[in-house]
Image (cartoon, rainbow, N blue to C red; front, top):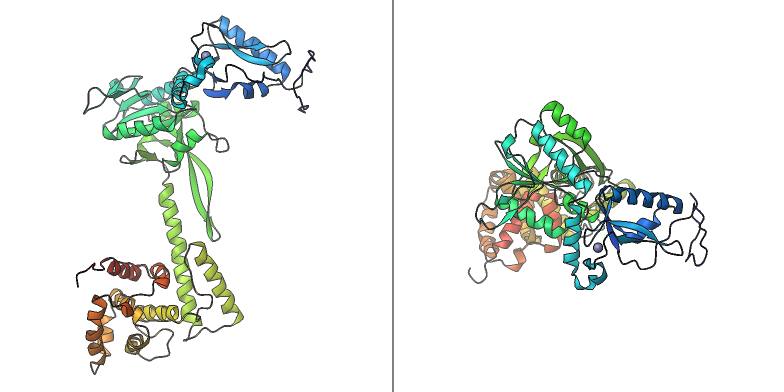
Length: 476
Ligand SMILES: [Zn+2]
């Protein structure tokens, strides 16, 4: 369809049927609710979305429905049914069927944003879309023998266990042997206040609140859908004719779940949408956070991150074992390999020196922790681990702490002691131990490389950090 540019249509009262319908500039009724789809629509946008000829046909249908007392569109503010009126210049706007002055559309300045939203929300609860979702939920519950039939209720009060004055009215509620559920159909203007206050209420009751949508399209999501989706481990639920039929056939409540699935994509993590039809009894529950999900998105992200982090650790260590003896063996291949390692670390926020030999503290840290871990000198061309210990005590006291923890974790402490035949190391150790305990600056770790240490050697890094956190304020 080709749309011709249409400014104010002015005095041309014969309109090309294929041109877009044009709304009046500032209609009194700014927003209307489509009771069939359950959408709040901007009146001007809605009118402008039709071709002129289609809008005329639509307005005839609207009037017919009104005659039969089956309104399809209501004013978003007062809930009064509306119909489409054409101006003399064939521009369009909505009008209430009863113009008795009770609508706040004319005086909306007096309403707060909050009140306006609350009114729209109320109007939407009457929509056919909302009723349809409720019916589908109830149908699915009744098909499921795990839910006690007498507990399945629609629009019934749910009184607070602790405060008989407080109550909610979930769209549908039901109880099984294991759990009490409140189901709420998501409306297009379910606003965050409502989502949050209900979540808190049902958590207090030890119940699970489940938000259910009538449909979901990944490419067309409202803010309100995203509020539900991303606070629910990136899972949202839909009931439709197909899921209700499956629920009846299997005597078990099934929902359609749309979720985000992360996956490995080269050096990063990609994501795609996925969906599945799942039994409510197989969903994972997190009552405390009021999360109910089929796919553990957060867990999968953690797993993928951990997987890629492990690969990054291994890559750096294998590089170190192969290319550092004790200085960097700068072949073109090694230079390129280091460049890539450094770039990958940079992505996760861990800085590495530009040249692996370029920072003597970093180099000594890697040599020291790897030597302790493997129980033999790594990097330095020594014969025994004890020589590494002496080297550190002489030149890199800032890494003695990490070296000590690495020995402990790898079980190479006694190996080191066995190499200290004349007790020289033992004596040295007795000298610097109190200095470390006193947090003498010379023995404190090099903070610049602590993030790298913690990443490549998580256990050693955690112990070093733990030691630093125990830093005494005035004592010792
Ligand atoms: Zn109104």
